[in-house]
Length: 168
Image (cartoon, rainbow, N blue to C red; front, side, top):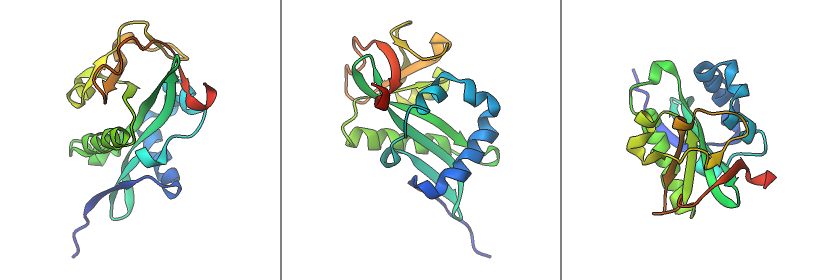
């Protein structure tokens, strides 16, 4: 019997249906009412900075980065990051996140933001942003608004409404 290998790849349009199924499973219908979803509706994510985890060619996890502006400052919005329940606790989410952050850094991006839990994202370099400095298009718990500086000081003084770069 052949052992299937877990591999990672850059996302491509052929992965869309599987990624949508993973996001539905992970976040349910409530995902359509979240602030980050409203931003992502404004335009496409960056396929060059978005990755999937594959087991035997089947998508078991994904992460996307979407170009945004915060006021006038360009940044990337990380998410959704999701892994199928039966594949959780194996480091897949962390590997996907590290790949996307590394790709963003290599592409010259300086700042990545997300709405998430600091205890999970903190070890990857994400920190809470000053309350009210980055305003999402719908209410979010200010303790969950996080930023990762890919360049030291990139978040200093950044403030404003977060919107998709296509809507800037």
